[in-house]
Length: 392
Image (cartoon, rainbow, N blue to C red; front, top):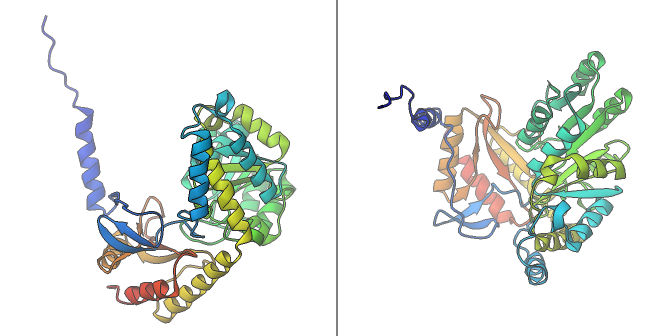
């Protein structure tokens, strides 16, 4: 018997209107093809470009010592780890890196994760559940918000960097976990960590800080935003850091107490059910961590470039945000304006990404300029000259 034709449409036919709508709203994203290592002097889509949109803050992603460590690690360990950490993928190289990161952050233990996104999902979903409340800064990274949603805890978001608003919320709704970025990835400003630590301690909640953009950049030897504020493990029990930004490699880690790390090993699904990163990558990160700690000039030069850029940008009347970090956003407002500015800079040979909703709130589209110790004074001046010519 012949079946009647289905009244249902092909699901793929629903996708084209959604893509077209993104294009109409100037929210469509496309990938650029990188033909060079991560460095300011890049080759992108077949063109030489001066890049100001990477997170290689210390200029270590293409450092000869890090490359050599990766090569030597591959010769010793091979290319892949072969399995999850809890099967047979946890090598002595991984163990050495965890111990080095624990010592670097001043904590008993550290645990490697494959990405920062997976680390945040794993920690929050392992520590909070249906009967708990998780409080997060409204501008937290998407992975922190998704971690709370995955945990099925009640998620409450407080106004950006407003510790007093958080306190009022917690007074009426006890917290299990308070979660914040240390340095906010799209604004470049710092969370009020001392105030948050006091609130967490007084309320009996855990405080978790994602310091992806602070480690390597802030504090003594690059120990991050916690060190910048003089905070220790008793103030911030849960520290997450990534390795693909200032450290120039790949991956992430969580540092904390013996009990915290053992709990994550037993319960963090994004740790248990994924393949370990290559051991050679751990060897490369050990090299980059050593460079980060000993070469203070990299942070000093970065500070110099931040000051040079902000002074010059203020002189030409740009709308800067309050950021003391290498992340220097310039507000455009509309997605259309941000795209137009980015295109104008690209035509001048400078690569600066337009950041648009939903990455940032509606009406706050921007250019996200990021600086590196690998930039030169001439690079900064060339950027400022091009920004001065942007259409308004």
